[in-house]
Image (cartoon, rainbow, N blue to C red; front, side, top):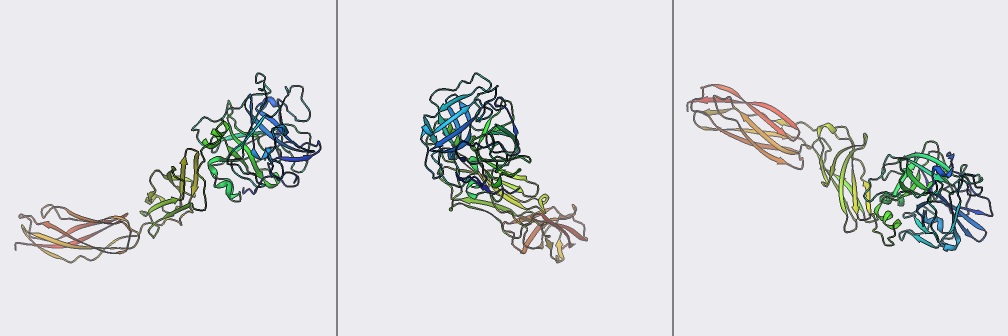
Length: 479
């Protein structure tokens, strides 16, 4: 399902997004669309985040990463004009199942904020943008000894990107896109997408920053206004925080994708852990090039070459050639070339490039090729008869007639019967698969004891993936 993404401009309640909810007065918003209401003990890392700007409140969600720090979305600490809030304007509530009405099982802990750290790569915008994370420092530690408030684990350094992983999100956002309710905590489950797959209509600036993003969706629910900053967690035991809610589909349509800042990316993880100058993961820019090329025609035996440039210094590239229909990886590694085998006739192939540096790994892919056709057939032209003399050398002239699209070794072997002489071969290379005539002169010595016969000599030829066979007429004499 294609997703059109939007971050909610504060104050535009009618627009739908997983962005900060701006509300005047005391009316709160509600849960995840399509989610189920839960008690805080089911997601005890979840906190309610509020920014008070005059008579306007901006409502978000956050995650406890340790007793003194809350992780949320960067856009949650700005107002609708792009002004960064002061720490005094931000408060959090931990241990609550409803931010406006405590449950008897809640263990509420309220805190102001003493410091706001925004990722240095984040630039406020009304649209979704990368690096959408902020860390809030609390004046006194939270009590993490009760089941209503617990820290969530971050990914270990070097963790594998969570593609196709079962996940959950707990947030204080809306349950109905246009209806504001009493603010209970809600839970949804879903599955993450492969890296870089976020719907064809998603904001291109986000797709091109896929080293630091993970997308996920659920067939029955969606993130919505007020869920910004909530944690995308694995459903493992214990759960791992793999993302921070950044954006969602316009209208909060059930099944629409959510976009989450990927906490496992070294750039993001390093920032969360205190580095104010984290390494920047590779990004696609206007100077980035990406292509897959070949010498036509595109047939089995053709070599595909994947090229990419315009990346920052210090990046390394790895290549994967993928059958786009089956999503099967045909070859992968540091080599940028791939020779198409006969088994892949009918496939369309693209090249996926993993570009890595200290900040993370970005995946980009080329356009797919057209369908791979079967290799054409080589032909042996008519061979002129020869007369051979016992004990002397004889030469058989063989010409291969090759169409375009046969690549690699072109060879011919002449195989006389054993009483006449020994096998002899010759070869050349046609690396560019050009069409043409390829002459060979095969010389062998006729045995002194050869019978005096007129016989056919086997001629075997190979041209890339094509083979051919013929016979040459040889008349053996005494001389």
